[in-house]
Amino acid sequence: MDIFAILAGLSTGFVLGLLGSGGSIIALPALLYLLHVEPKSAIAMSLGVVAVTATLAAVNHARRGNVDLKVALVFASFGVLGTFTGTRLGVAIPAVVQLSLFALVMYAAAWRMQRKPAVLSSPAAGPTLSADGTLAIGGCQHYFSPCMAYIALAGVAVGLLTGVVGVGGGFLIVPALVLLSGIPIKQAVATSLAIVAANSSVGFAGYLGSVPVSWDIMAGFTAVTVLGSFAGARFSSRLSQESLKRSFAWFLVVVATYILFKNAIGG
Image (tube, rainbow, N blue to C red; front, side, top):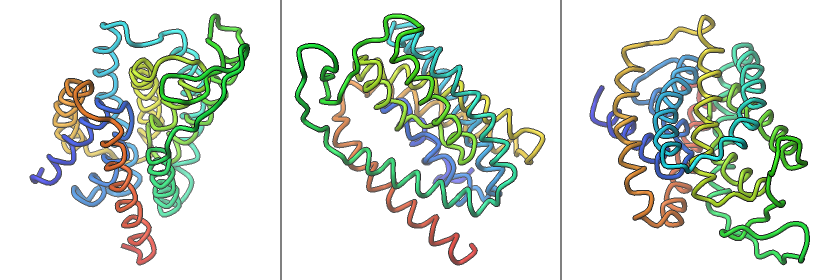
């Protein structure tokens, strides 16, 4: 790998460890444009890279008690069903469609990261405000509580997206967890990593046998990504996440525009 691919791998892991999302959004363009992997193979390999990295990061968080295992189990259980279905769709549809959808997802992620939390009023009973200003629908006290049904539906939707375009979906999972379960943002980030690990693992498995995988490129990229994730986790409490999110959002806009441009000219 050249120096730019190594930096991209480190950045992938750093962002994933720091924000609990965004790993595959860097990994896929890096595999495509820096390592010149074919689009469908790049989608599959980015899922494999993020699966390994997110798993290690999630285990680290779980040891410290940051992962809400109950919420993660429900979200991931339904998420993997959506993910596997998404991979079947992803294998069938043209790569140019997948990459265009991926670029649109990047725009959505950038918008989500730039958007300021809404200021909401909180009645005495019912929905409450979470620490970052988002709406929290009570707490998920048991597996059959109403919020668990919403979490299951969100899991299927994010899983479909993961399978079709090859994104872990952390930028959607984190706000969904805060909104639907009311868990603190730090715990939501850690729980998101566990869900991303499950979805990405199933997504990678779903593409195996249908698209070629360059195992040596994937192994090298994964190794530097894992190193980056450890650095991201270490600095997560020291850096301003809001400033990082705004900077990362503009980066996503630039890369998404480049992907759409390359698709338009057939590059």
